[in-house]
Amino acid sequence: MTTATTISLHFAHANGFPGGSYQQIFNQFPDDFEVHALPKFAHSERFPVNANLANQVLELIDYLTHTVAKPVYVVGHSMGAVVSFMTACERPDLIKGVIMLDPPIASGLARIAFKLLKYSPLIDKFSPAGKAKVRCQSWPLGTDLVAYFKGKALFKNFQLACIQDYVDAAIDEREGKLQLNFDAQIEANIYRNVPHNINQYYKRLSVPGLLVTGSHSDVCIPSMLATFIKKSKIEHLVFEGGGHMFPLEKPQQVAKIITDRVRLWESEI
Image (tube, rainbow, N blue to C red; front, side, top):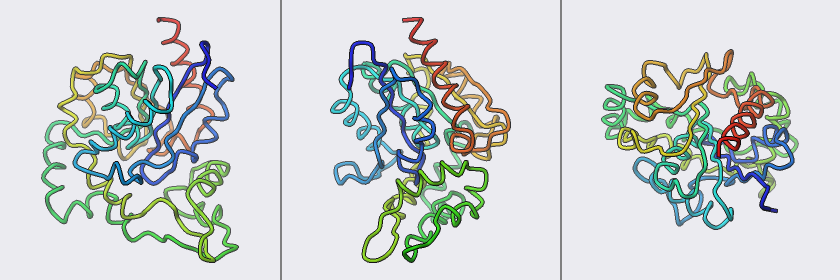
């Protein structure tokens, strides 16, 4: 319940990982933090995936407007970080600060190359879209899905509790099977539409911002981020030892970074 002393925070998930996947982070937040998390972006008929995820920005604005009664800190991982940043630029009246966790951002020549790829079938080869559209979406009842996903490269460094939270959030029992509830075609389409127009948001961020990137990330490449950091005037912190999925590998440390930063910003108001 929102009160005058409650600090409201929204966490935007990475593509393919419903909001509930981050429960281990949420569990670490102090009692005066009220956490909101849109369960699954792009699964509403009102907000289908479109160019540069413009509809997902509108989706987050709609969610914040109808769910949170006062300005909120927005935190996002990967795709969710980009959507949160663009939302903060578009609607600073709704947002007190933004924390970006390893966002897929390309600037300079990389941005132009990615834009061109979007208009060719090669986008599925040079982005995760190709794998997403053919991923396994159902399993027999009784399958140990925590063990199944632990054996996948993407999940190998996850805390087991985070894998369990992902399974709880992303898998339903339907029609006598265990089935993925995050539509694989929507997931692929999100990858195909990762924004190439981030340059249009340069110098538009008017609320405090923090960018946290994994030191071993294969998504956030320093040379591709330099222009974004400089022109957005956003503070940059490197998460040592972390890959792209570090929020689900080290949730306790990530929760502390978020908590400490929000406390700092609150003290400066």
